[in-house]
Length: 112
Length: 114
Image (cartoon, rainbow over all chains, first blue to last red; front, top):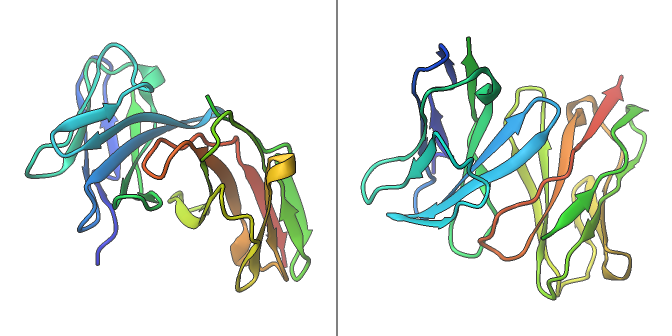
């Protein structure tokens, strides 16, 4: 059973561009979570999704950030008009119902 | 809202020493979950344990053991006979429910020297 997959592993964008981060959960996992690890700030929750539904987006910045988990395909975290402060490691986790969250390897986003 | 304190920021030990990583949490929930994760230098996050608030039994898994003390809101993690490969950042994280978001502590950087 493959683990949580994230791609790309490294992403470089210039200020103002869009970043799209993908997450494929483990087989059989219907819950997906996104977290961001900023330098000196630690890991912070962003959003929790189930298939086609956003369950908790209390950690999402109000502007420029969006997330989806369609019926088919991976979960996508989209950051529009990136700024330098968006540079961070973005982790996706998946979970079967009622179990612990298993994390992917992360996507390191660098904004030039 | 939940809160977690990992007061130790960096710990350095010599291989084969035992080391305990402290975790103190705050929650108003009567039911909650506690997690520990490891982040080695390669950067990924590795799940170590999940414990629910109803189960106060201590747990042992190989060289790892966890001491859950509900009365003091602590969930400490001990590595026995540490090894260089244990060098990593360790995060404690409470959660309000089995599917709810994790609230991570700032992490403890453990360095195990040969």
